[in-house]
Image (cartoon, rainbow, N blue to C red; front, side):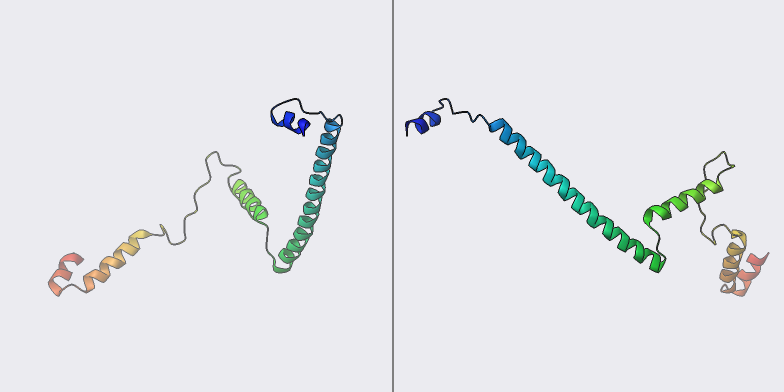
Length: 123
């Protein structure tokens, strides 16, 4: 009991001569276990990727990276000879002869006006 009392009071503890060696072995075992775990999960992920690729092939789906690469290649191909930045895409129907649309709207409004006002707008 006196040895334990000395340790509790802050006395010198007995040093284990093999403590450094045991700690090194423990660290090596942890590293090895971590490597085995990583290898196991890498193998599982590879199997999953094979299955995903089979599904993509079956349904004609492209990977996100492939879609982005194709879009980037298309943008570069369009602006290959250009010195300026690529133009922004304009939705269909925007800017297609707006004067005619304005006139048709104006004509529609005129149709609903009384006769004398129609004559004024037609001149």
